[in-house]
Length: 56
Image 1: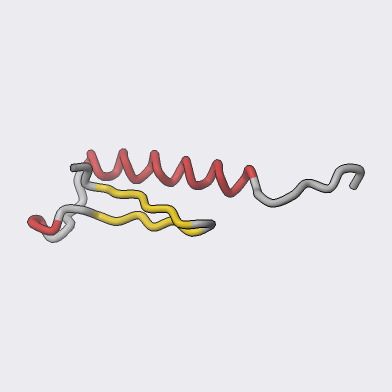
Image 2 (image 1 turned 90 degrees about the horizontal axis):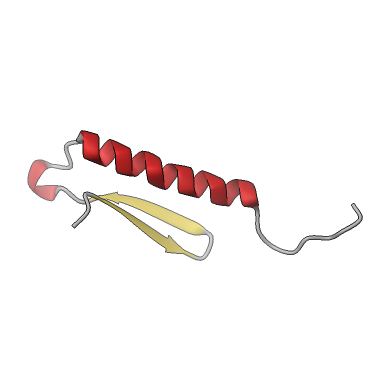
């Protein structure tokens, strides 16, 4: 199981730490995964959503 879990629902996203045995102590692996997920979410935010109205 990955130490960082991304859960999406509609337009919301949750990033959850999954290391309860270590009190969610942060590791380099977690930092890399977290950055990857944040980059994905940032790309999604910049892409926008909804309907595009041309000509404006």
